[in-house]
Amino acid sequence: IMFNTGMGQHILKNPLIVNGIIEKAALRPTDVVLEVGPGTGNMTVKLLEKAKKVVACELDCRLVAELQKRVQCTPMQTKLQILVGDVLKTDLPFFDVCVANLPYQISSPFVFKLLLHRPFFRCAVLMFQREFAMRLVANPGDKLYCRLSINTQLLARVDHLMKVGKNNFRPPPKVESSVVRIEPKNPPPPVNFQEWDGLVRIAFVRKNKTLSAAFKSTAVEQLLEKNYRIHCSVHNVEVPADFSISKKIESVLQEADFCQKRARSMDIDDFMV
Image (cartoon, rainbow, N blue to C red):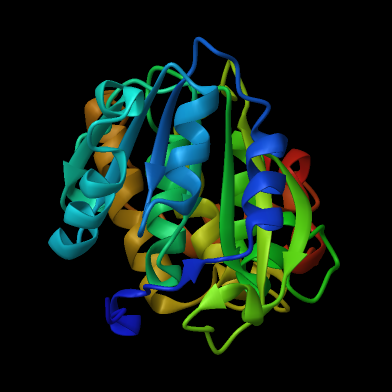
């Protein structure tokens, strides 16, 4: 098979790493496993040995045929369900554990699709581009700390498990890779994620700027004024004729003593205030 690198097809060929990933997933015989990007099935067949059922999501029909051929006429055939299509557009079934060697271009949307999925799963062990993985686990003050770091860590516990060199794949990708474990926080934090993301999006547009400067941009002020007026009308609160959104923002930031803080060094608790 000719692999399509444009679709992010880099098959993990080193059995030691495949085994390491499966070990870190700590599978139980009763588990349903979601595998995204099964490729030719190197990991799938080992997952099938350990789990009750594997739901494999694959976009490429050639690889689906390869996978079906691999389990045909074996006891594993009945334990494998294949979903053909784009995982981002697919309604995910119930699963206990997710294991994936993802096309790297869908890393970010896939992480949030997973973290907002209900019912909760136990954990996900995922292969990412090294820099993306380091962003997921970055702490306030780290060079790579960003909106992705704080949003992921709000919803989950994230651990970097191992580095994987490019020669472990066929064909080798241009970048180094890393395996990360994500465990969703259950129960989730008591925040509306859309509102939270709106806040950190503004703060992290220029993460080195002070919050006072970040909230002074015209676009941000217009957006906040519109939202504030909608909020007031929904709650039957009258907006004074001389209302100024700039002054409102400034007073809120001063009250919390946040004018001079910068997103690059703020943690989840700071944003929760």
